[in-house]
Length: 472
Image 1 (tube, rainbow, N blue to C red):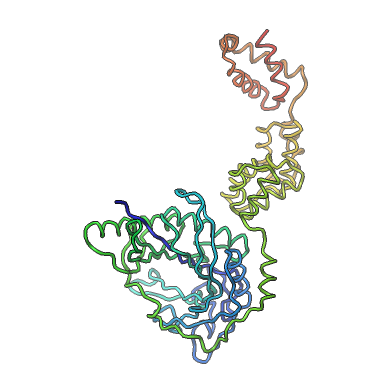
Image 2 (tube, rainbow, N blue to C red; image 1 turned 90 degrees about the horizontal axis):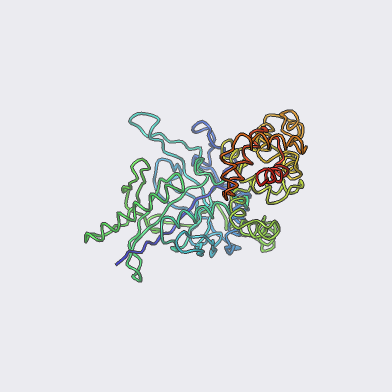
């Protein structure tokens, strides 16, 4: 009998604030260790926290984007545990009264099609510092720059049934939060982190004992770690052993998981309301205003691209994967270019350049002008791609570059005929095969004429002349 995998994810997202959750220290990435700190995030006696209003707003925006119910009253609590990178001896979080509950994310599962993944809760909290094990030989160093950094923890329901589904959920969740402007969601910079809970059971049986996997630095590694843990649990159960509730770490180099410590339960943390922070009370009118201010989210944009621009579902889905790419595409169309032609360029040359450099080398208006040169037959598509590579290093217009490079298409019938005659004369064997019924050779002759002309010949003018010569 098969085993069923049950997965739930806890995702920690850093809202895009300039300062920390309860003090004015900067949240910038990459500073020298222990430089973005103050008495509050160092946990010094007598220091008092002050709630970051922007972190609250971004948390609400994120919860609304996930379809959650925002609770008008939520409570910050102290989560008590001892660890070297937690100077206060507790973390300020939310426990029994979180900011929001009950959302849903629709995910395209590679195995089950479209599925709905429940969002159990979204709550706000502060981050701990970071233990560094590779700075001083034989010692562990502590950097408290991240201590107090705001986080929104998003807890999914146990609705995922495979490591691949978990990855698809994370891709969709990240996209929603980036579109909503909540966070850049960069695992490399620590603004998105994932803890994964996994158990296995026989279909229809009660939930099995779950374990938690940490230390995953990419969505691909989340999938790999969960697959490794799934295999480990099944092997234990099939050998007659049992799964114990532990926290594990994932080694990306070996693709294996190993236990860190026994998994804690909520009562181990001795939660109680933080006496220095009053309940967070949000006015319903303010919540409604945040809901009204939500930007267009990915599913709505994808539907609009198909309906308004006539794009295929695939093109629409790829274009709106990143907000910057989608906005660039729309700017090209707004500058007058055909939507389908714009999509082809953005999904080709533009996206390739973006993936390599993280930048757009050609402004939307100049790309629209280049697309127009192809549409009206001034340059060929092949020539246009050559012009595009030149535009990134020049402020010239596409027309100026086309003239400078000698890429303006030749439409003169006499010149086209001379190129065609030269090609036909140079390939008598292929001419005989064409006349013998190999019509597909027309593409060969077209290519040879374009090569002969240096890409300058107008393809629309070549074809009738070629057909006349080949059939006469």
